[in-house]
Amino acid sequence: MYRFLRLLTPDDVEAIAAFAYMQMLETGFTAVGEFHYLHHDFDGGPYADPAEMATRIAAAAAATGIGLTLLPALYRYGGFGGAAPNQAQKRFLNSPESYAALLARTRAILAAPDARIGIALHSLRAVTPEILREALAAHHDGPIHIHAAEQTKEVADCIAALKTTPVAWLMDNANVDPRWCLIHATHMTEDETRRLARTGAVAGLCPLTEASSATASSAARNFSRGRPLRCRHGFQHPDRRRGRTAPARIFAAPAPPHPQRVRA
Image (tube, rainbow, N blue to C red; front, top):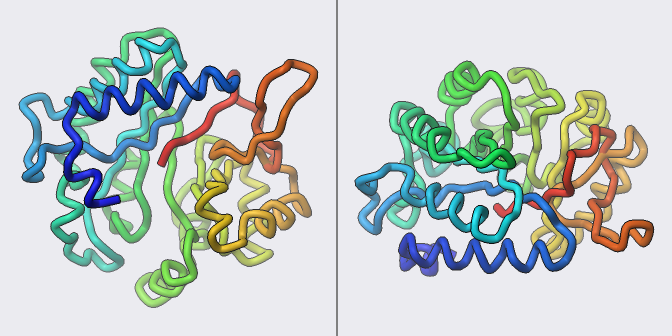
């Protein structure tokens, strides 16, 4: 992934996004949540317009006619405890200050009535608790996405750094509510599953990623024992009544106005 991303220009990103959105529309999706963290130029420095890449994503959505929720990702560190990022991650990185500027500029470019902005706090390994709290305090409405409990190593590293698991830390330290989408949420305890279900938050399953570790079906079954929750990350099934592809309902959060898939 890193080798591919280091080659992409803004023109490339716009073309790839437009093609992906066209394919989504052809299969019945009418809206997309874009978990967006390729922000900077090849050397890791900002473009003249710090939201250049976000502008290209918005242009692709406008050209294809898909509804857009743009989720600029805050990615600061390379691991828990503020570990230094590696060179391959330099196009993703922002400080809290530069991220605030990116959000402000992104809000200015999203003029379409069917476009809105949220935030993506990449993961608890990419932001510290202090940075996460600062970002949440500045974002009072709109969706909030974060990767959590994707891999067993991530869970173990989180326990070592924060003395608890990623999902438990978020439940105990962030006001997780229906605005939240925990992407993956794969390696949870039964108690965490029940607690997350009660919040009305969404778990965004990634079928290809989860299939590689044979955990997606297990996660779905566990959630179904609590409250049925919906999935935005794929996991779709045919809805024959409407002749379109609809999200599989595995979470008990209210359905969005349009089916959505998040590209992370």
